[in-house]
Image (cartoon, rainbow, N blue to C red):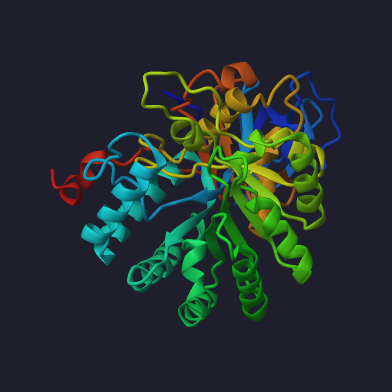
Length: 438
């Protein structure tokens, strides 16, 4: 058990900590080979009052806690989740681990169970879990085909208010792009999303009228001053190029809002010429891309002929980043038919992403993919970074370097919010037994 005596009030200093250079601002110190700098972090009244190189820092703190080189990271930002689907696995599991099986099981569960109480209780359970793991902000997609839109959006608004000050909660509508052909219905949904201060979103497929449907979405986003969030190309089909289509639509409309596109799995399967053309357009359109490594590893290239999967299902994150395209990794689904596992723990996401996508040797500034980059995509100031004068929202780990930090679950991490340590006890799955019919 982690027993560091972090006080709940007064001025104190976290001495001899390791902060990663990609997650701090205004600290003039030499980094080690892993990108860490040794520093002292002084905290008072919920804010960081100073970050100074270790042994050089001065503080009026009444208490000094020596971390002996433990890693501190900013609280995490999780920019792609599905809180409305979370934790339904016990009552509607994926029958075969396939994408089609996930769709069928999720649709069946939604039709049978997704009333306001069910969605609210599962969302609250998920948020308590994420909070305990050290997440500061979450964007969730909400299944928004009628009649679910009339249920989930009011639940989301209530949940956002309930969690205000603990987790900043955003929502993006989620419909199949083909559903936007009903112009009157989709215009009303866009209006509802605007009222909720949400994000306009859809799942794109290579339908014949994709360009026209995207034009409709961009026009509504401009009309209502909405950002956009897409699920795109979650497949190994080489001909799936809707990421490029989204970029072309953004350029056609000279769109000035934020655009986030998730998955983009097929990009890793396409010929070099296709890839370079897409990367060029995505960069010019100022689109950000989020990879969902755990979910895509689970679903993509799953075989039913007793053979082994041959690819990882993730997109070309290194190539995207090399073009200056903002990239992030996120949780995606949690214990539902699209992913049987997960706990909204962004350290687990980063650990798995490092292994799957090789975000190491060198580490570079990849930690930004779970902190500052998603915060910027979500328009969240002062999140995902540690700076003097900023909020004291941070996570203290036992690990002292990357190999220690990413080798264990760090279940005894200390989460500090507003300068105070929080209770990091996780909710018991048994709370959901009644909903699951147990």
